[in-house]
Length: 182
Figure (tube, rainbow, N blue to C red):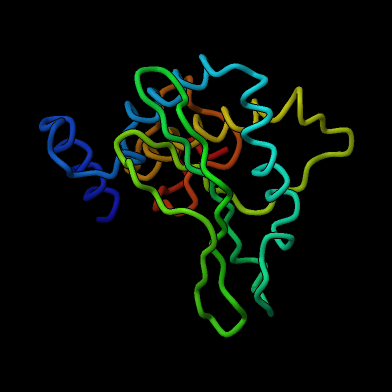
């Protein structure tokens, strides 16, 4: 039933594109516009703007002052403001986590331009020995965007389009039934 509801909401959003039915981050065309902006993003700026996010993904505890933290609950975020095929701003890193007592905590900014933002949200990652930030991290970010589109379709119980059948972390909470799972 949840997948049917997700599909119905998606169809309604397609029928009424100006309506506020789905969050922009649950609209494939919004994420595709973000992918276009990233394809125009100068690599030097990307490497500078995303270094803190990479560092937080590797070791989020360096950004958390509370304790004791339920380390399984940590989600590292960064918000990218974009418009007309161009990345305009990258936020500071934000971290959402729970303490072992179950209380939720957050550091960093919240979205402020939802129709012109991409939200990157991933758990702590282990990077392989020899991982080269300068050469490989842009691919991690692009894969994350493509996997988010994949997961929008899986959330509706549908096969994603072939170009979005990628491996990697996408949406963190979907009700997909494993169709096309990677």
